[in-house]
Amino acid sequence: MLATLLQPAKELMDLVAPLRCAACAAHGPLLCSNCRALFERAALFRRRRAGDVPPVAGLGGYEGELRRAVLHAKFRNASLARELGIMLGKKLHRNADCVVPVPLHPARLHQRGYNQSAEIARGIADALGASLMADGLRRTLHTRPQRELRLDQRRRNVAGAFALGPQVELLRGKTVLVVDDVLTTGATIAACACALVSASPRSVSAAVLAIKR
Ligand SMILES: [Zn+2]
Image (cartoon, rainbow, N blue to C red; front, side, top):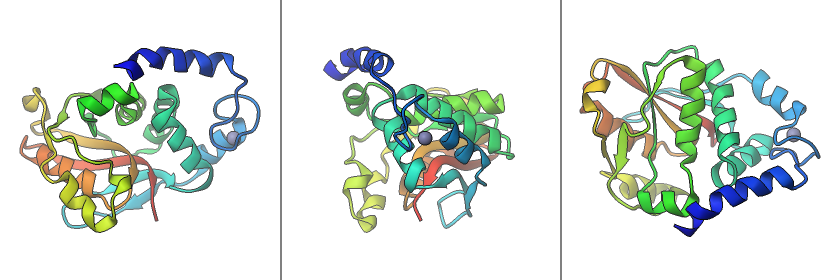
């Protein structure tokens, strides 16, 4: 609750504090023109379907400037998450009817103040002209953050952690894009896709800001 109350204060601080680029720390706007051009020019990273992990497209590799920008978007600045989402959405040739973010558990949402994946999804939906289904999925288990776990523990951690939201009917026959911030093993995306498939969509694919190589 406190974090939720503090979020506007944090955003105000971001406005009044001398700004630096979230990606390269150069003085100036939150994303400097060099880093913006770097992200805009880079070719999409793609990962093919692998078992129950659907095909994934990413803005780039989880390293360097993009990694720093993603971390900033995840923990500090919702508008940066949305801006990076717009950049990603502009590159996605595969169109989507519905964009569904990986949900945060309500307890973590209160702690952080916003869901970075929902902000990225909002940017993608805007760029694609697709509908954002912010509550297409809900998280039923309060799992440990995947980044705190070994790779071989991640799949079990999120198994059964997601369920369909209230608007199941809107997903039937649709091309659905699941959105997360970072792809590592794909365990989270696979668990989300598994829940979404029960709504009988036409297809499920995924988009993330960064892919760990
Ligand atoms: Zn920069």
